[in-house]
Image (cartoon, rainbow, N blue to C red; front, side, top):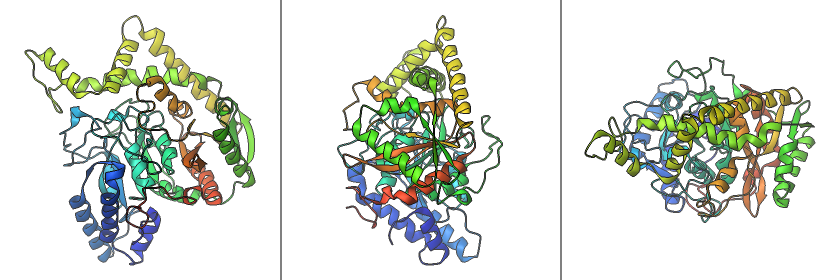
Length: 492
């Protein structure tokens, strides 16, 4: 069979044209054929996947109702706990950790019939924008294997971009779904903070982390988010807000929709002529679909990077204190307990994780807490107010997802500030907690670039509607084929 979108696979299974086992075998064959070039997975689980596929086929044969993702092969980023399957978060300190339970989103995927085929590579503890900070390997971009796929959810973006699976889960703290989605020519969604349970997700920054789907098309993202969203009593930050049927909100035109264009972002992208032209064309495509373009302002967005790199490392410093060698994960013994802590963390954490722990510990330290952390939280509040005022003037915001197309492996890895700047356009939405997504918008230097769409809190359906109309009218995701491509079930 041909590897298509998730909803096409599910519908083919429902019609009896293909079995869940056959769909799973196709995905596993595609992964095997592309993995040497992509390096997208930290672990593939064929036995578990095929056993689950057989259960799905048996349930269908008994006449049971199909789940929303029944028989659809799905990959998950390797920071979602999977019962009995190693979960590393891309770190040596968790290299041999096997969770005794599964994350809520994993259980919800499987409850809707999804078949998890493996765990994808990522920047260590989700700290990075290139997928080069993994302790185990660097993932490649399916459009150019000399370039990065983006991070931190780079493995998930790469395997969907190569069409090995139609759906993969990632997490987004400051852009870690949207940036790699843009780089790999796929759809990537960061839901509203609290929309999706964080229970069973290895934590980076607890007030920012949010799980979301990376998919071939917008319909798959709508279905996948519907499957994993919803209140979870196991997560104290989970919002008790009804989850709509997102597919019913997809649109074919944008008549009556006001799309906000952020003046501050236009100034930031202007020096790059090719990127500026791509986004201008995207805005005009939205207008051609019937949208009214209105100017909006996010005046505090220029402080986003500084604010984020105080809050996120501070929370990481607290969260990562649990890795001490005493309970689980790597343990390096020393002459006393404090030496064990030091030796374990020195051996287990990579350079970028150590850098952020130091930043965060400093920001939280006596004498600096008010000057740095508290002030950053005040700016965050102002940023949320900016979005509230912007959405009083528009229904959704359209803006750049990235400032450049994919860059070469190693090009920014020695310059942390240059790497941090990759998140300039995605961080404000994370700090404000509003939903945002990247949808393919074209190509620069023959490499994919995404358009970012943003909606008010818990209005993901509105965002999906605009994204679907834009996607169907422009067809950017289908205009070209990456050099590592498994669309026919085999590597190109």
